[in-house]
Image 1 (cartoon, rainbow, N blue to C red):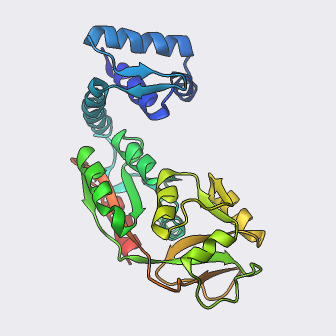
Image 2 (image 1 turned 180 degrees about the vertical axis):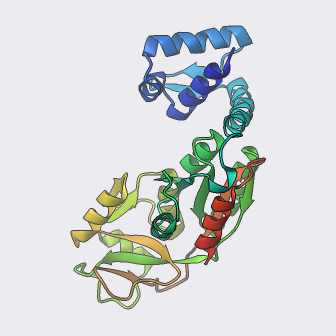
Amino acid sequence: MNFNHLEYAAAVAKAGSIRKASQNLFVSQPYLSGMIKGLEDELGYRIFSRTATGVILTKEGERFLDCARVILMELKKLREINAATDERELNIASYYATYVMEQFLKFHNASTYKFSDKIREMGNEEVMESVASGESTIGIIFFAPEKKQKYKKLIEKNHFHEELFLPPLQMYVFLHRTHPLAKMPKIKAENLNDYPFVIYNDKSSRNYLHILGIADHPQLLEVSDRGGFYDTLRSGEYLTTMAFWNPPSNGEYLAIPFHEKTYQLYSCCVTAQNYKLSKREKEFLEFLKK
């Protein structure tokens, strides 16, 4: 067993498929399948159960992956010892959040030195997987108060350090100025069922529909990126929900408050338990808070 075995097994677990993982790793599927089988034979237990659609972790595999992630994180630290810790490039995984993206770009463009900073937008669960695997060093998630305990358990399971670092955001109905509801002062959540609705295609976004009481929305469209999201809204037919501290009052899009109650989102920054933030990473998080 070597570090490659751990990295490849983690990649298969993340992809949920040996075929998909082999494409991501740029190795052949037979090679990766044989390597996983050899690792399982050496360990004396199955890491994955094969299914018709891919693979899932066994109970032993879940424990194996928890240990493997710790080892891979420590390996990452060893490889970065010679790096300039105070001037480290940003490597952020964030839930789809306009505010975070805007502040990231401002911070990046204002840097005295040019860095190859990275930010990837994804669902909350994917954010935590990215941090757990070492793919990202900082994760930013957003969740409803009703889901706080769920994410608390996931954070504890992954042995993350967490910080609730931004004040709660208020949820609004978000739509284009040409939408039929654009002139409404307030909107009831139940009325959202009457118009096509667009969300990002991740689990946390779908779960929020349950909180709004529109989980069975008859005209739901899921998209995977910000461009498709805004293109859909720009049609004037679709609407969605979005969180703001200061909602836009003019421009192409409108944020309309809910009629019957206030919905909120909390935010949390997560890092690996023993990960030491660089000076620049701390400055970025402080920049977000301001």
